[in-house]
Structure formats: structure tokens, C-alpha cells
Image 1 (cartoon, rainbow, N blue to C red):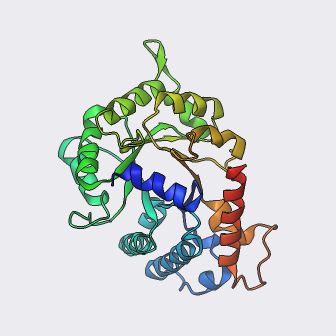
Image 2 (image 1 turned 180 degrees about the horizontal axis):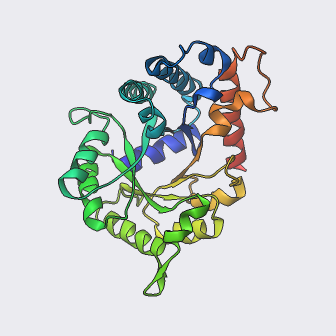
Length: 301
């Protein structure tokens, strides 16, 4: 199956469009994991990150279609962190979750091909070293920087999510600029649609998805129409202010075609007052699971 077919099937199987972002931060880890870390030891922090993320995966498996590890939090720890990222991705693969690595990679020519070869593909015989099913990609080096990723997607039934309209407040500085009567983000959306045209699965979706923030609901409606063949990855829900009503426009008539990311609201749910945890935070996974169920229900309306 193509990546789009697999992701939409996982959405329908779980009844969820929630994507759990794996963004570990030492100071916010549950107490048992914080206390396990040796002072000034990057390898010790990396081990805590591995345990934290793998236990989140165990808590949400079967409830959501996918997880999204943010590479930066692992890269921050150097080589030990990169080993941790690999272990987390492999654990998610084994748990049957689709993995979207959030690396926002891109370059031109052979360098773009190297990025694609490194990250894209989780199935044998052409499994990539990292084993991700999809990767976030920046479009701002042009079409020739995206094509190597798309070619690897074709070969390995993988996907990419192109940054089209991001959720951060400053994104409009570049993305909203108007050139020849249309904005930059509209031009990127046109390119995404063009790249998908000859690659559609039976449901009409291609391997080139798009990142469109929940914090811009009007543009989300606009871009859903502009990119009918793209699965949308929607950040900005929850902690960044996006609401359930804001993101429903991303879904198709079957309730698929998009996934909505939440990181802090789920993975650090033990810090939220509405979820009861023990004083020693030993039952923090229960809070993760409860927050995931809550988000699923919110998005179902």
C-alpha cells in the first residue's frame, strides 16, 4: 500500500486523527524519569528520553494512527540522542504506529536524495536506516529540492509533509508575501498538488502531504480545497491555541485525510490539573492515555 493508503487506513481503524508529538524535555519528564538521570550525563538523559517516549508509545498504541518524534530534542543530546531517536522510531514501528519524523529537512540534488534515503521507508527490503514512514520537508529551495524525496516515496511507499502554512505567529513574514497576485503559501500548495497528480491511490491521495497550522483556520479551509490530494498534518492544536472546531475542516467526508498533532498536552498530561496522578507521578502513563482519549473525543465532536 502507498503511504497515504496506510495512514488513512490507520485513521479509520483507530477512529482517531490524533498524532502524538514526541518532544521530550528533561525538566518536564515525570518525576521517576527525572530522578533517574545522572547530572551532566547526556547518555543518561538520552536513556530517560528513550524510556519516556517508548512508554508513551505503549500508552497510545491502538488509540492513534501515528506519532511524530521531533528530531531536535534528540539531536540536542549529541550522538547519544541520535541513538535514542533510532530506538524510539523502532519501538513505534514494532507497535504498529506510523512514524512521521519531524526534521524539516531539505537541500538540493544528491544531498536531498541522501536525506530521503536516510529517513524514508520502514518496510523491508528497502527499509531506511532511520525507518520513518514520513518526514517533514521545507519547500524553500524549490521544486528540484522536493523531487528527490518524492522519488524515494514512490520507491518505498513513504510520504513527506511539505511546510505550506505553519502554525507559528511569525510564519506569515515569508509565507504570506504576495508575488504575481498570490501568496507564497498558495504557490507552495499548487506545487504540492502538482507533485501528487500522477501518484494518487484509490482514495485520491498522493504521497506529498502538507503542514497547515490549526492557528490559521481560514487558511486551513482554503488549503484543504487547494490540495485535495494531500493528507494534511495540522500542528497548533491545544497548547498553541487551535480548537477542535478549527481543525475539522482539514478532514475529508470520511473523517480521514488529515492528522492533528498534539505534543505537550498529551505527553506532559501528568502536569495538567484535570488528570489525577500520584504524588510521585508513578502513574503518569495513565494521564497520557486519558489525555489521548480526551483529544480523540474532542475531534470527533
